[in-house]
Length: 81
Image (cartoon, rainbow, N blue to C red; front, side):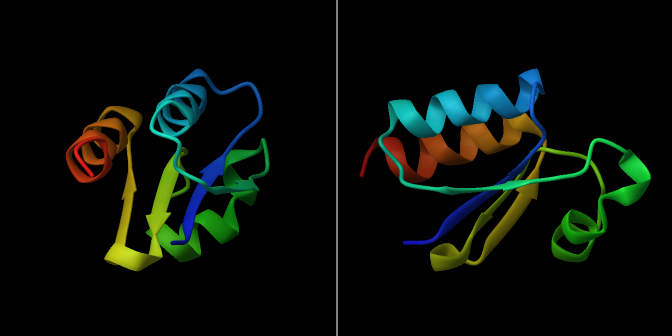
């Protein structure tokens, strides 16, 4: 399983997702993004947006942003597994 989280240090929305990933014991890789919004080219290439967090779940072919949506996806896809 390959789950990648694009995140920014000190971002409370990113930490919300990290906390849920940890609670569900989901292994993931962190990709740290630039603090300057205009410099977040890698996350834009992956997701079409420069906002974080962005979760990429390669196994399920999912790329999504917005922390509440990501947490809901993790609960739906992994909590019952």
